[in-house]
Amino acid sequence: MEKIVQSLKKEQEKPFCAYLYHLPKLRQHVNQLTSTLPTKCDLFYAVKANSDFEILKALAPIVHGFEAASLGEIEKIRQVDKTVPILFGGPGKTREEMEGAIHHGVTLLNVESTHELRLLNYIASQKGTNISILLRVNLKHSVPNAKLKMAGVPTQFGIDEQDVPHAIVLAKSLPNIRLHGFHFHAMSNNCDSKTHAEFVDHCFEKAKSWEKEWEINISYLNVGGGIGINYLDLKNQFNWADFTDRLKKVLEKHGDKRWKVLFECGRYITSSCGYYAAEILDIKQNHGSHFCIVRGGSHHLRLPAAWKQSHPFTVVPVENWGYPFERPEITNSPITVAGELCTPNDVLARDIQVPRIRVGDILLFSYAGAYGWAISHHDFLSHPHPEHLYLEADDILQGHSEEEKNYIDALIAN
Image 1 (cartoon, rainbow, N blue to C red):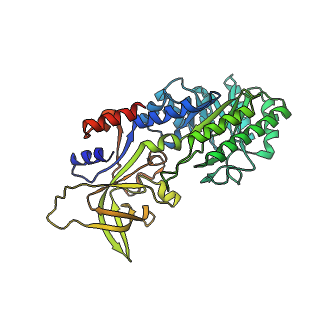
Image 2 (cartoon, helix red, strand yellow):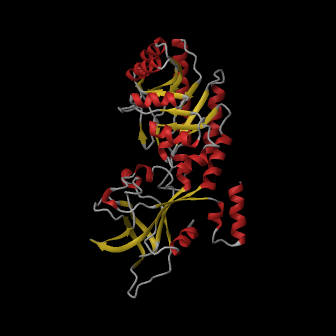
């Protein structure tokens, strides 16, 4: 990727700023995920992580479906594929969104409250149809080491576990509602495979008890997403192989149930295929600290500022220097990477040791394919947007030797 960035920089005089997406890497990663999941499990992509058309188009033939959190996302999915299965969730669905979900043929709608349940039944009855649902449960306990929690603590998500029996009785009484199971999306960015498998086991136990007590026929168990990326230690990522081994044991334990288990992952699917590149505009020192100012910032990549953490990057050297005066640089020193916004919160990485960095070099932030551009305040201060480049195999091979090309070809093929 560094050679691609260097090549692209040569073609323009303006400071370089772009999102780059490695589509062969994305396909290879997701093929590996779907092929190693147990047969009773389906992998859906949570569109909220990155809803770019090219990303959805690349994923559509590989994932088992998409998870949408708005009518806008449903419409984006249908622009890519008219028939792919869709799960629809979110804590604040409007009547228009519910009508749109019915119109676009969503497979399952995750109901967040008893009011939403009654409203959905009313809309379905007005249209003379039935709608298949899952009840979203806010469990008493969640995964303890997840970055964000949607359950186990007071949040706006789902139906309190203690109120689930009432919701089941209501769902069974409504003529246009078809209750097919439960939705347990409880956390975000969990990097521990053991606790994630234990969470799935806990979801099974809860659903089994409700199925027996209330005499319902469950078809689906949606255990949500929440599998994370370790941005602080890139070598220590979620152990997918260990998770699937543990997951198989969970499924064997509950072998009396033939439910389809649904995963709706976002970050874990697209994060590693995306990069954010920003050229260094200035280097300065204030109160004993070195600052590196880039063309871009948190209005393009909001995640590090939102989570108050440093985002991983590498330095892409650019040798051309077109000015007759000295080129600012720093060697063997910690630097803080700040953007071009007029706020001290516009920081992408803080106190990171670098061997050498110069004005005109480019910082390449990895793991930027999820919750990067999609969640950022793009138009604050009206700075230009970055380019968005979707790279296929030929683009990625550009600038490499024949030996390197053969090696990269083999990586993509496998």
